[in-house]
Length: 72
Image (cartoon, rainbow, N blue to C red; front, side):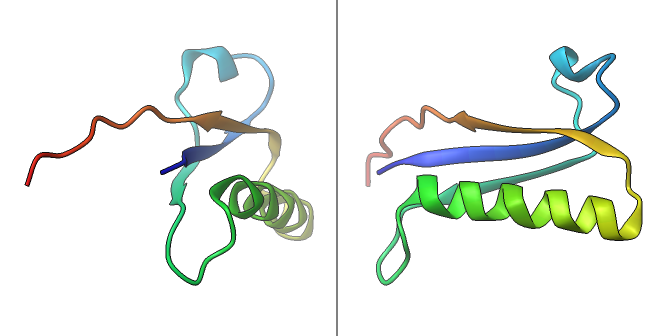
């Protein structure tokens, strides 16, 4: 199962510290598009929302997340 974390950063100065202003995790699932497509769509939506509402998000990052399999 693929998992991606989408994070929006205000300004370019400290984005490398990984302290975003907005963060959301997307996963593959039944009846859902692949996680990568969901993450890219969310990134586009965040860019549009930032421009429209003047949030100042200048960097939107998509990173894969390694999840350990859970034993039931």
